[in-house]
Amino acid sequence: MVSRAEIVAFLDEYLSIGSFPDKSRNGLQVEGKEEIEKIAFAVDACMDTFVKAKALGADMLIVHHGLIWGGIEYVRGLVQKRLKFLLENEINLYAAHLPLDVHPEVGNNAQLLKLLGLEPKEPFGGYNGIKIGYLGEFQEPKPLPLVAQILVEKLKTDYVKAYEFGVEEIKSVAVVSGRGGFAIPEAIEKGVDLFITGEFLHDDYHTAKEGRLNVIAAGHYATETLGVKALMPLLEERFGVSVFFIDEPTGL
Image 1 (tube, rainbow, N blue to C red):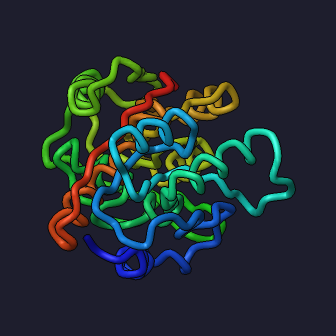
Image 2 (tube, one colour; image 1 turned 180 degrees about the horizontal axis):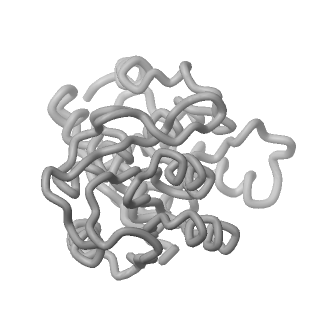
């Protein structure tokens, strides 16, 4: 076993938890057991995830989307049920939102590029004054359907959808996981061949089309499984704890 304080201190520093302007209250959101033996990892803090974490004996749950966004106004309804479950079962809840998007090694966006065999070349995707995504570049151009197929296979999802609005051969790629449509104008301005995100919303469609920007929507959930999964072996090796991933896909 290892102390909760030791794990939290490591994560806070490694992910630079306090360095980002983020609505999410990143870091340890709910205190549970002081000694940690098993850590569960998931995308979302929700009851389905909590129940599975308890059933599998987790002392801590690390998620990308936490429970507390800005603050808690009332402890009632779903908020009360979720907090009560975590507290009664002494499950620690740790959240890393933007810090786990941005991280150059285990972050969602760095990992998304690595699925395509690319390395983060430069930061991309300005959001609240910081760049949360990355740009990468193929050595040899690839057709858009091939890039989409690689993502289908690597993410193990059939959600991936490609919108062919630009060049046929892809060399430069920009990525912002989750709901990244805000970065479409930046991708157009930079002359990027392909923009990859999770959700491609109605309002984004004509902007991308008129800007002749190819887009791949690979799923909000699927593109944000990558960061928490990349954290797992890091904590397992450093602290000798048992780790497991809880898969609760939304199909979105």
